[in-house]
Length: 246
Ligand code: MG
Image (cartoon, rainbow, N blue to C red; front, side, top):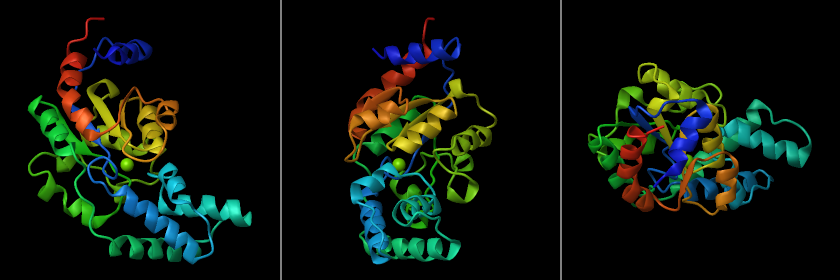
């Protein structure tokens, strides 16, 4: 049903999966927070004379704030942004973001995470986001589902996505797991890139305005168009992954 599972194992020389954890990205996967982030980025940049269209903000999702600001400053002014500029733009972005109503749980995400746990696989979170308000709402929206000890957030990482660091750290925190013991669920091109670079099987969920091709081009192994779609398939994916006959 999911030939991508054996294709992945064969490509990596694995005899099969031994799934122990599924690492979920947060923004655009667990919470529908990306429209607010994109809007806040666009407005904060415009406030300081920089142009970052909302749709383009989705392409930068997962990058550190400083990384995004630097790319736009380079493009527009032909120079790097300095620390003071980064600080003020990022502060403005956070101000706008915090003015918006808190993002809702992504439809279908609770059912997905619950199905993972019921299949005997531990769900955890690997996010580049430092959004304290969302991190604080995890237990409220996903009670007793996630392993908090294995979680990776912005404060834990130095490079952030698309560097594989956050996912490698997630495997490390989970007791030194290998890629065949993990899967990644991501909505952003840079997040998919990070998961693939970490060697993991990456399930892309296209919850935003970008074409599927940007996620597939980064090497996503499977793609769904909503968390509801994924929730209806995740149990089969896990079962099939753990029973591959290679
Ligand atoms: Mg995301």
